[in-house]
Figure (cartoon, rainbow, N blue to C red):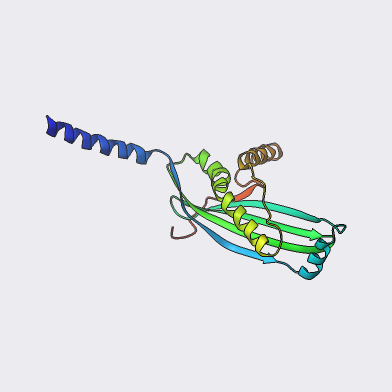
Length: 189
């Protein structure tokens, strides 16, 4: 009887493993900096202006964009592009541009879940790392660290989908939140 239970236990474990493999699964395979640029074109002039308490205050503009593309049968690359420009008066204090990416594996995701996963969940995972890189880069450039506010990618995705549905009910695919290319694989992943 003990042999029967052992055999049954192994078969049960194999069935559980097959069931787990058949269900939806997603994982971060890698995260990496694809491009990082920092410019401090008017350093002496800007630091002089910032040292004057009655001088102009810096104005900062931040833009974030998300892009995704299929890299293999079950692999997708998601790009999170962050650009920030600070001006003091008419002079550019600094400009930082970061293209931070992640390679995500997705198995057995329903078709209607792939786009939300790539444009909501994936950038949500990548953002804290990109935020730290931007803050450190700006700090290393001689300025106070630029601490980006958290982004609700889900709310942005819903707003963009609703706006796209109102403007062109027949259009599907990319939104202005990001671009997505789910065509042919783009690499050997």
